[in-house]
Length: 118
Image (cartoon, rainbow, N blue to C red; front, side, top):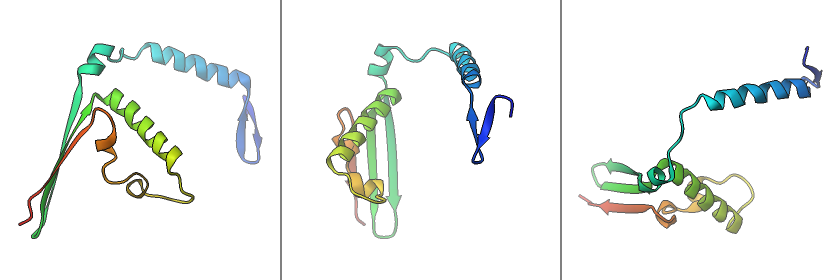
């Protein structure tokens, strides 16, 4: 291997290779389109709808969230706070760890549930 050595089956990269990768990534970043400005991030929103039907139940939910970048930021903070407060050892499903209404508890999110039993 020209730019590194093999250690226990995994390559160990030298500084020269890492520097070249960084240069490539920085050049690539400069070719990407600009992201949203603050006004666009603050005024945007997402609308989501879900419906479940069977012979006994007819349920639906609507969720309104802030713009996608802000949603990512807020949900990441919300999850981190809950992990800090309520972490358990071993594998946990998101439902078990955070509860059914985690999104309704995050500022800027509106969750409406409708249950029309047949």
